[in-house]
Length: 125
Image (cartoon, rainbow, N blue to C red; front, side, top):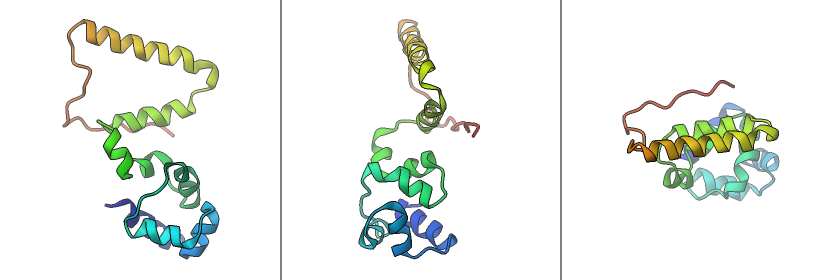
């Protein structure tokens, strides 16, 4: 389903007009109409949009055309969502571990990619 369709469906589920959703996100109603019509969304608008729609940010971003161009596997979004829940004092160590695992995989000749048919995993909330 296209991101515009997702926004429209969720907005209507919440009983919001385009104007009301726009006010919650901090944009004009014409921006909401543009998004619902298939127009692009500025990436920095996604957090406010997710809050206004009471939607999971990672799931909403996963449907964006920008993300579909950048993400090779759905697990990448799950990793991003998990990263955001990690306290900042632990992030350097976590990043070092991930980089080390990547190097180890590259050194062993194992591919660093995941098979296309692998199902994405759910990240606990």
